[in-house]
Image (tube, rainbow, N blue to C red; front, side, top):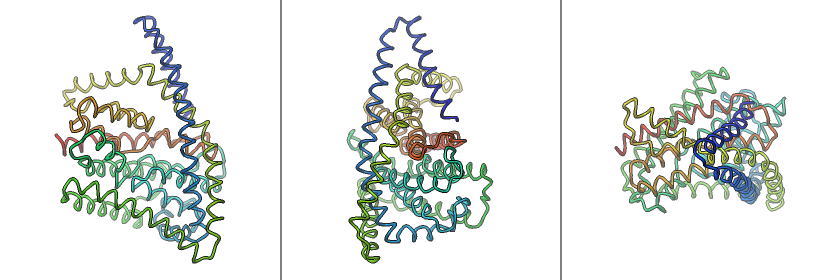
Length: 410
């Protein structure tokens, strides 16, 4: 329901600001900008869906091999103690556990192209357990918020953009992003657990959170002692090596089970095409609304207002140039990337503002994109409190990113 109100608000606010711009500032061009942005974003939404078709077909095909080869069932048993506590409504041993684990793992490795089809696979399996097919279930909301928090151990994408923009040390944001995304994930996880009355002091959940904290602390200790040029190299190697090992593991498991691996892949790949077509209208609706909101100048007014408040409170405003990335991040992944690149182009890739923007970009995922794609793929219309809790985790991640950037770069 909240998506309905947010979607309407984007249009009404944009219309109101466009009226003000025309009447008081004589800006008639704004109407053309708004309509052009709507056409452009609709095209972009289709292109994203089209681009996802190949990736979805590839990974859902591989997942089918893993499913028939018994790998997904193995992962389900492996993580069932923890996920059984976080997703109490999912039956023990259900294949959704394996798909959720694979999705979370791909996100942690910064492999967005792999994470999305794995997430859609998990969402489809969760929908099979959902008694109200048009309303998000508790497991769906927990899964979605974990996705929007975007726990990332290896922020490959951000480092690549920094390298392209001429940063002296593209990987210098590695540790700040790791810390910020950890806080975002913990905030989202704890908030949803409290909402769904899941016992956070359960020994399995508590020990898992402690274990994750130790692992992240160990990664920080390992990378903090490396030369900057080695950080990017080892990060990229680790993520891609693990990913390819998973693919080989699926194939070996299929051989062991004596299944027809090629036919299994084709069967899963067909599901990828169907899923890509399903999400097109949801993606068009969300991206068009966001583009119109941006084109009207509403985002600029929000940034100016926040800057004035920050200055009035006597807070150091050195990060203000990174606010466009922060405000765009929950709305549009490509928009946030554009804002990050613009900050690097405007202030310099190694400037404080650019580093803050890069840390924010890697701290969380794109909440409304995930809402549109994941829920849209299974026809969920009533998203309940998922958007609000996802945005809360985004806020914590963005604040953590700004604070961490001050510690590392100021």
